[in-house]
Image: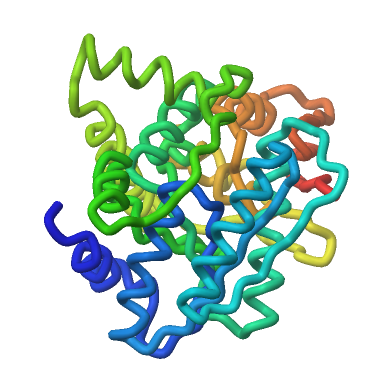
Length: 323
């Protein structure tokens, strides 16, 4: 890829991530991906009159390394005259990726509101997409989980580097003298994603397909297109009560559609109730289908993954119990 800046602009033209004069919250960790994105966006911002707000989170988990990340991000932002907002998280002791993610995106959203920004930009790349695909596949995810990440997400998050490999990012940083730090915890085998990154993908590249990262990322993109096609086939037969966080429908309206659409409808319901289908696996969806399709006359109830489904006669009541 000869011109990464031009590529990112082309991706924006295709996916409509931002327009001229937008304000963007740009999440920067200090690693190569986000420092590369910051450098690229500084160049684009000058051409398109964008306002960039740099956002950094110091979890304090890596002692001096965490402090060096913060200093690097703040110094580069100030060098270019950009506002830099830093959240310092005290007493963070849990090694919990989901907790870190929630802290990160909750903070980004607060900044988006504070600055009346149009979007939140993060530096996920093609390798991240491939890792996510494999992670969900190994956990038994259905089609919805295999979609992976998107250039534009419903929660205002955009990912301009999603089609760019990590190798290209490192090459860009070297050619453009972009400083970055390496987070050595990314090789910690405690986390499944790290094992996929450092063990599984290199094994697949060596023994099966050197282009496995591109293949997996492209597969995730094609599945996303399939999901959009399925959406057009769904006729919404359920009624939603947002105040009670409840969905109600009749079994006869569910049983007449084919199995694939039944699963897809349940995923749509879960997303409507809980806001996400993360960690929702095929086994759970089939448990819900089993309850709905049961010919037993007695009342039946399912509870799990913050979801509760109760069937009484031909009526099904579906609720998200997440607090």
